[in-house]
Length: 575
Image 1: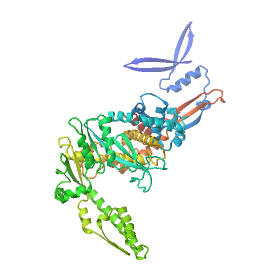
Image 2 (image 1 turned 90 degrees about the vertical axis):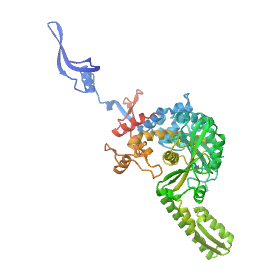
Image 3 (image 1 turned 180 degrees about the vertical axis):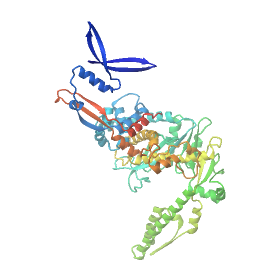
């Protein structure tokens, strides 16, 4: 007996038929008799029957091969899929090299398990990342050398990103943040305003330039005592000269784009090379507009947004906005700070009463530390003398400031024909995208801090790797939005009240409320979905022959439906 397989084409499809036949001779002729139709059986069973009829001895696969290793692979596959879809290797360098492989591996590792460079060379051996990129033998010294190589290429890479995502007529978002530093040897490590809330620690500042949707384009690193506004000229130079943009709108917060920076932009503008801006007024100028009657608070009774002009801002539009929720938050914060200030000053009063603080100078120094800590000096009346301290809250001052709660004024050089009032507000609020990037830098996603590198170029390269990792992460989270708690309704945000507090879409609220998707599967956070993918392993099978042959192969465990969907969404990422 034997198995006969035939194939035939019908309407563009190929059909196979497996028949069990016996052959016999009758009247000197060989004839064939079909005993059974095996076509309905799985192909593997048909192959087994064919082999047994040929006299082959079949044994269980597990008796021939044994699994000798199993390492997590699914999360690596997802991240590398996105890295390749975004063309990160070609972005880093158009020529393949050992340095490029190491940089790509460090970008992936920063997303998968952010850690020190030495720990990275250990941890990527515990998954498939090192073997996938061929860096299993890399040492931490090699990683440092690759970082030096990357530092020299940063400008070229940023130009490539700008060419992808920035064009004339678009907007660029810019903001500055800082991270604390471990050690004292790096020239960038300086005492300054800590955005990490770690007073007295050395830090390094870094400014992130992004496109209008929040994709990172470039990162600039500064000493920790650098002021926000002093970094703006570097960004203007990048936009105009490095990225060759003739007409772009720079969006920055009130501490970034002040009168001095706006005037510098005006001086550099020409008829063919014009850079516009959107920013907000500082509180001092806001109070001045109220004092001279330009900003009329009564107009907010009819609308939470209205535009006006002022001679102090020639060629600009001003937009006054009032957010009652923000107003309540500011009132609560002010009262909280006042209460804390009262408590600290009462402690000083008790020290004075006990005779531990005697001179008016010593009392004044202690009081100064308190009011500087909580920034409430403007609302206090102080009476300090030798052996005496009295204070009271200036109710009139508090009432005047309360009138401004929830009010902010934006300024822009864009004409109403180019961008209406509501869109200006939306664009300014899109700075939250850069703040979100900083949260990813500092949070569990990328763990940019603390910074340990001693050399300036290594600090720059470390932060640049974090930026490139966030570029990948930005696209990955967008791709996975249907499976995460993330709000997918990006278009709907353009129709909502720009001044009112942000509201999540009905679909996003449903995902959060029910904690499951429309198909009944669980809604995930980014971290839990990555953990789920990490359970998808790659198994190494070895031949059971006592080591006579070096035969082994890798088998990827079949993904669950959840893992399969996540991988498919990652594969769909495109520029």
